[in-house]
Amino acid sequence: MLYRESGQYKTSYIADQAIFPIREDRIGMAIIGLVALAIPFFASDFFLNAIMTPFLILSLAAIGLNILTGYAGQLSLGTGAFMGVGAYSCYKLTSIFPDVNIIILVMISGLFSAGIGVMFGLPSLRIKGLYLAVTTLAAQFFLEWCFIRIPWLYNYNASGAIEVPERRGFGDIILTGPSASAMTQYFVVLAIVVVVTLAVKNIVRGRIGRQWMMIRDMDIAAELMGVRPLTAKLSTFAVSSYLSGVAGAMFIFFYLGAAEPSAFSITLSFQILFMVILGGLGSLVGSFFGAAFIWGLPIVLRAGFPALGLNVGAEVIFHIAQMVVGALIIFFLITEPHGLARLWQIGKEKLRVWPFPYA
Image (cartoon, rainbow, N blue to C red; front, side):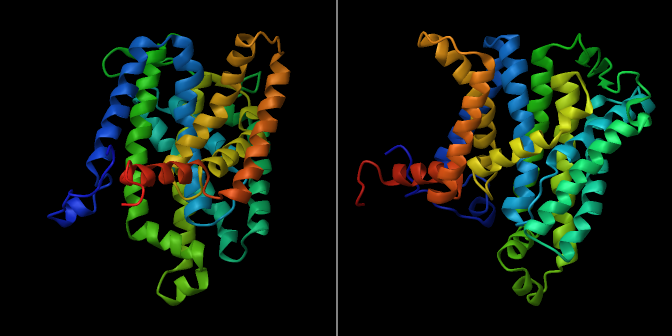
């Protein structure tokens, strides 16, 4: 009996409303935390730079989209563009305030993305469904055009790209730039993702989160019960865009190091949408599952085919990964709309009664 809730009594409201009320969940999260802290001491720089850091960043972006689509039921195809707003905002902030800690600038850059998200979220007060998706798609193309056609955003760089400068923090530790170590950047990204995810978890469990879910399930009934659609929908776009903006800033400053506007194209928006669908709508842990699966699948295929003695080109592996993801999206939408998070939940429910399935 590895996972039993029986016998774990709550003696206070605080204990009953804890994020992890079951002892085994707390132990599991502690083990995951220790593993996350220990990975940099055993893994190579390539593993940290190419796998773990982008996985954490894309997980945060998927959480942002999941807040909007999974919890509030508002479709969006502009996540990549909102990430770009955060990245370009952080780049301009580093130029204007070179002495401010880069972590503070990353967190502030999300506010600019939140403002843009609220502006493009105004149509959600009158339209929804496919029409709202088209509106966010228009935001994607418009913001991409701004990234290309407004030289002030990239400091009039002749190449049209933004290049991350070297910034130090916490004394004399190099946080960004070519000289920054993979371990340092990983720990910074890990800390930001953990803190923001816990904050979002508490928001979702509170009054604001319940308003979002009421709007998702039946907006007219929610309005009749006292929920203001204006506040609920726009706050959803604000929080979602803020998370996307922070993820976009980290995507450039702690992963790519330099990027052109094409880094925030519609392809990135669809990739994050697929992470949310596969991971599970309305689930924070599902965002991590979806990001891990989609980001890790090409890497697994690239290592698996040579192990089987098959010489497959990189472009073939890319197309195979796309076909697998497409097939799984169709499969999950038909058989399990709540994605990998639901399979994880079913597994935990089975463990609660194992090895006595009829208890």
